[in-house]
Structures are given as C-alpha cells and as structure tokens.
Image 1 (cartoon, rainbow, N blue to C red):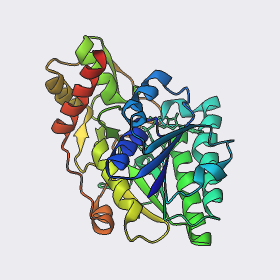
Image 2: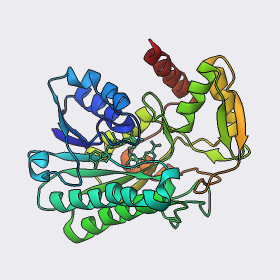
Image 3: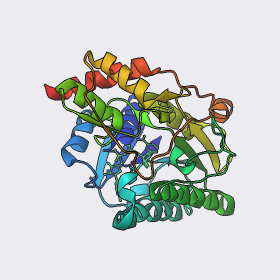
Length: 314
Ligand SMILES: NC(=O)c1ccc[n+]([C@@H]2O[C@H](COP(=O)([O-])OP(=O)(O)OC[C@H]3O[C@@H](n4cnc5c(N)ncnc54)[C@H](O)[C@@H]3O)[C@@H](O)[C@H]2O)c1
C-alpha cells in the first residue's frame, strides 16, 4: 500500500509516517516546512524516516505544486498538513489559515476526485465545536467554532463531506482533541510546560487554571488514522478522536511537574481570545465504527514526552 502523508515533517504527520513504514507501507511524504515553527525541529522529525527505503520526501507547497505526480499510485491520503494554533488566526493571520487549511484541502479533494483512491483521511479538530453545548461532545452536536482557526478546520471538513456526497470520495474526518507526546509542536502548552519545568523558566498560564482539556496521546491518534485507512466506513464519516479524560490546566501543571521531577514555574495571565473553556469528546462513534480506544493515559504519555524533551538536549 502506498500512502501520501501531507505535513509529514510535522508533529502528527511524522509520528504517523514512522508507524506506517514500520507496518510495511510505502510512504510518500510531502511538506513545505512552513515558518509556523522552526524548520530544524521539523527536519529532525524525519531523521529516522530518511534511513528507511520505504520513505520518500517531496518538499513542495500543496497550494501550488502539481498534485498529479504526488498522487500517482497512492492508495490512501492522510491529510495532516495544516496551519495549526488558535492565537495567530485572528486579523491578517487569517489569510494564511484560509489558504493552508481550506484552499489546500479543496485542491487535494479536487485532485483525488478523479482517482481511485481507497481512503482520504482528514485531520479535523475539536476546535470546530467551540464552547460546546454538552460534554462529552458528540459528533452530532452543532459546531460553533470559537476561533478563525476552528472556522477553517470546519470549512475543510464540510468540503470533505461535499466531495463525499457528490462524488463518493472516500473521505473520513477525524476530529482530534488536543494531541500531545513526542515531537509535540513547540507552541503547544504541554511542550512549553515541560521546557519551563526542565529549565526552571516561567510558564505563562492563560486563565485561572480551570480550563478543561481532553488530551489525546499521539500514538493513539496514529492508531485511529491506521484504522480509518482500511476500515469499512461510509464516505463522509466523521469521528471524535479524544483521550476520554477531563483534565484542568491546574491538574495538568501538577502532572507535568511530577513527570519532570520539578514544578513548573508559573506566571498567571488573562485568558486569550479564541481559547475555549472546555473540550471533551465522546469516543463512542470511533469505538463502534473503528474499534478504536485510547490506550495511553496522561501519566504514561507525559513520561514519554519528557523523555523526548530530554533526548533533544543531548
Ligand atoms: N496537534 C493537535 O493537537 C491537533 C489537534 C487537532 C487537529 N490538528 C490538526 O492536525 C494536523 C497536524 O497538526 P500538527 O500539530 O502535527 O501540526 P504541525 O504544524 O506540526 O504539522 C503540520 C505540517 O504541515 C506542513 N504544511 C503546512 N502547509 C503546507 C503546505 N501548503 N504544503 C505542504 N506542507 C504544509 C507544515 O510545514 C507542518 O510540517 C493539522 O491539520 C492540525 O490542524 C492538530
């Protein structure tokens, strides 16, 4: 099986590609090494993949590159490329979010429409729910994105559904809830908390510590992608991929301190526009349709992420 992994140098894309080649897939990865965070970090995510003859890297911008050769022979597209993060999606930043999250997805869908691929797995997001009406949030609950980022992730998901219902493109959207683990993006809270605890530098906490998140270990997200690639699913299926536990920011800070072995030094700041109070996803649908369960608890996942941070220092 040949997979195209978009955003392969990123946090989730590189973990997914590692798993696919280990499982015997051929992987064609594409990345443009956007400036969202430093290129060096993304290049180091690919080191072990480059040593594997089943892996091929194409450095290209999905907004403009000819998608024909990229898709040649591809069985499954794992579309992980995106412009992540909530805070930069306001004001002039929005244009880039729209291009990378919406325009790129539409280009890919239009290109696969004329090909016989087996599956197109789209990396959607819990951010499409905003401050949800109920918890744990079900896929049938109405989407109310609370940030421009969430709006673009929802728009792309709706495009996936339109291509599924009009042209039977075999799309599956996985709505990831805050993903963490080795290679986590440097802008994400757990990454910054661990660095702060390791180096004794202050961490800015936005809000009063009562915000609740449903954290999902990257290995569990990868497993959901693998199951979604081959499972018996109707075109346009949408599923929450969530860790299944509710953790407040204050509890998380305690857990990170315990994993590192020293506390996270804190500076308290006002909550930021676009941040929601709570995320928490029902995983019943993924359980039923994919036979998927998150298997990594926060303590285990944090220990693995801390190990990765310490390994980078050497
Ligand atoms: N990390 C999370 O908690 C989380 C939660 C929900 C959804 N998601 C979604 O999962 C996907 C992966 O997230 P991540 O955390 O790994 O982000 P990431 O920034 O680490 O990875 C995204 C990769 O896409 C690449 N990319 C962006 N635009 C491109 C383009 N035009 N052409 C080629 N490559 C391009 C970037 O260079 C980057 O390497 C994103 O779509 C994100 O919206 C992530």
